Amino acid sequence: MDFVRGILLEVETLNKPKMAEFLDADSTESDLKKLGYHLAMLVEEVGYLKGMPVPLLGGKIWHDLELTWQGHDFLDSVRDDNVWELTKKSAESAGGFTVEILAALAKGFVKQKIEKHTGIPIEI
Image (cartoon, rainbow, N blue to C red; front, side):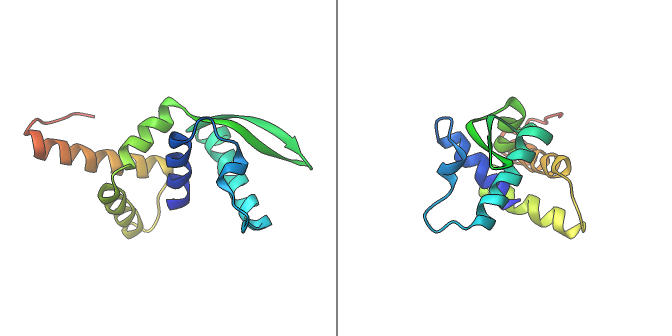
């Protein structure tokens, strides 16, 4: 999940990046496949990103990547490194997790943090 979080943070930072912008000169074919797989999942399955697929050699590469509303929501809940580490540790201690569970855990930790700082209870 660190890889996915990293992708989302990069997409937010860059202006409609192309898939190639995530790779460097040392990237291997395995790196390309891993990135392509995760981008496809984030666009087509989870809906955290939108982008333009470009067919290439029986596969596809992605251009003009952008965060969706859901992508911004998830990223905002896992942006803080401390919240992210707590979220991962909690999910790992349970023995398994889904993206939805990670998002809910992260939102719960953010909620606690806000309530601690403001004294205002928040319902989500």
